[in-house]
Image (cartoon, rainbow, N blue to C red):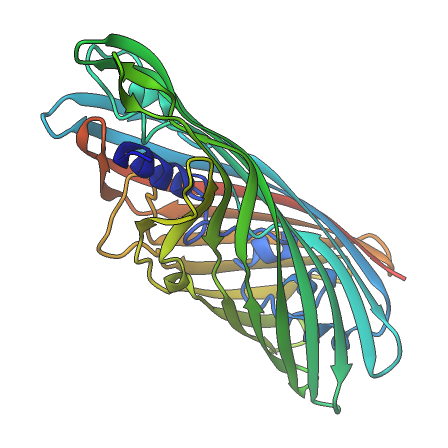
Length: 427
């Protein structure tokens, strides 16, 4: 495998998991109530069945079965400005390099007795969609087509959990996660070779999917009926994606190959564990505050590895990333206007994961979340929720090395508008 093919592979796989609206490539969009309070207190509030996505121990707070069905739309925005090569050649700007994504979720909690409960859930923790190809078009010079193109990634988390109430104050929960990941990626465009001239290159073409298995453990501690704390730890798997994975194409000068196409059977992408601490405090009959401190073990994302190459490549470390662990800190409040209406709001600081090694392929940054939402109780059994969040990221200067054109740099800024609607039914 040529050095150029190795570099193309490293960049392409990295891009396949970027441009989400939280640190690294996480999504924080598991419920409308959570979005409406910037996820503050989500691991312990237990105002609907979506708490299952954050802390299985909180199922012990339910005395009736409940179903929650939610749908969110992440209107993601990624701006790229002043993109240029080392010689000053301008690649241009992109007003929006991201794609919006619908994000559905489902939760069911069933208390078996006063000690045991079980639950089932389906939701997404990761997702992205970007198109950087416009930066490679309309130029009379070679552009870094190895770095820029189309990307789409989706994951679905299937969870089964149980909880056990140890005593009046303490409960424990355990869950198993089965994660389905699906992705597609292409890197193509025109490139002018010495002595050969201009050629249409399809450097990367990926259609891959994977299953990974992890778990979650949680604790719920009720100080009294108005104050409680939650703690959870989610163990995430390494995703081993397989499918149609092609890199490069055959390009030669006479009998001397410049590029050689190679097919691979598997790409290994490490995922991050997540620890979360949350609190809920009902200060008055109508007013409550809540908060969350979430730590994500992104330092686990050190490198990406490929395996099973058709030219004899067994295992190869594509690229070192040196990501850093990140914190997500949020604070929110809830107010019950009357028996029918509840309003909520939240604010959060989301820490980026990229350290000293910056990259155009991962334009991550610190972000602020500003959110609000409401609940309308239709009757004692049914309610609907709406949540909105504005995510504002910092503008960052990023640099990437292309094997085709050398150093590429740009300024990127990412953000999003989250809209979510949810229905809850208590049996």
